[in-house]
Length: 153
Image (tube, rainbow, N blue to C red; front, side, top):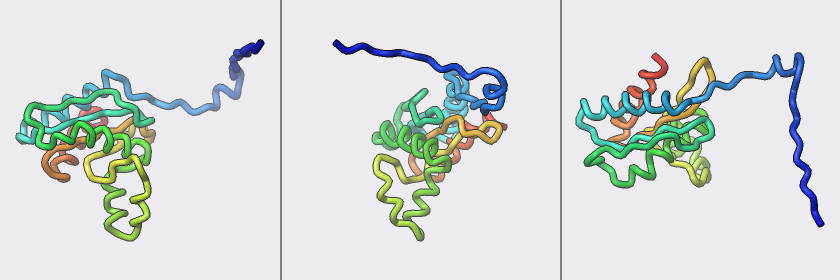
């Protein structure tokens, strides 16, 4: 007969006060980013897919606009966001690496190594990322930047 031991460990006193505090991207904040990105895409007539993830690359919100230019965007946008969140840099940096001096970056399986994913940073901490799949890589980044600007001016 097996038994399960469940325990908790609490940190008290001075040690707890020295632990860093990590800000989190809430659903409300993710929606602010999404709505601003969507507004930019609509204003420019660039229908797309927009995804916002937390700092672990897990999805918070995803939106596929009517007539999104790239149907595969429902896979690409969250993948770009996840890549930016987990690498802590724009997904385009990995595209640059592949096209430049670091083709070994292709071995990073399960990531989307193309422009359109940008990390979201608050007070120097990555709290999440946005990924966009529109019609061109430049449009992807313009839309993503507009989303981030609504949260982090």
